[in-house]
Structures are given as structure tokens and as C-alpha cells.
Amino acid sequence: MTYQSPFAGEIEINTPKEACHVVRHLCDCYCKKDGISRFHCPYVDAKKCAEFKDKIVADFSKKK
Image 1 (cartoon, rainbow, N blue to C red):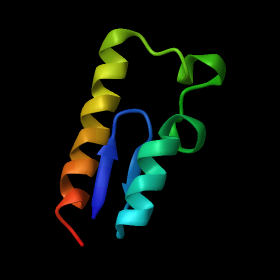
Image 2 (cartoon, rainbow, N blue to C red):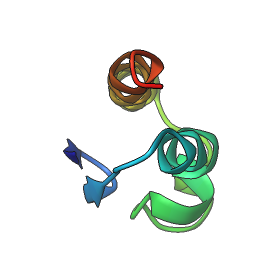
Image 3 (cartoon, rainbow, N blue to C red):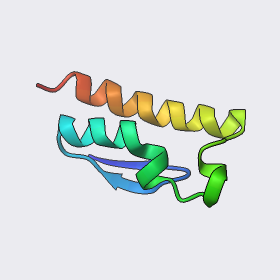
């Protein structure tokens, strides 16, 4: 499945293992913000990322 994040761009996720990696490492590996701003998001940005992660979790928690 292809996901579109406002801060990480387009991410292709095909397995629950990949989904877990993306959710756990979104800030470290995928965020395209610069420097420290990727780890200290204002509320609106953090909310968008949380919604993005929640969508991935919901989609892949159904798959076995």
C-alpha cells in the first residue's frame, strides 16, 4: 500500500513488519523536516503525524 505523509512524502508499505518499522522510525528515517524540528513538532504537525501512524496501524492490524 502507498501512503502519503505531509512530512515524509510517499511511503510504500507492504508487510506488517514494514509498517512497524515506519511507525517506530518515522521521525528518524522518514521525516523530511530539517534538524531538530523533526523531533519537536508543533501540535498541528504532531497531530498530522499521529493520524498518519494511526492509519497505518489500523490498516495492518487487520492483516495476519
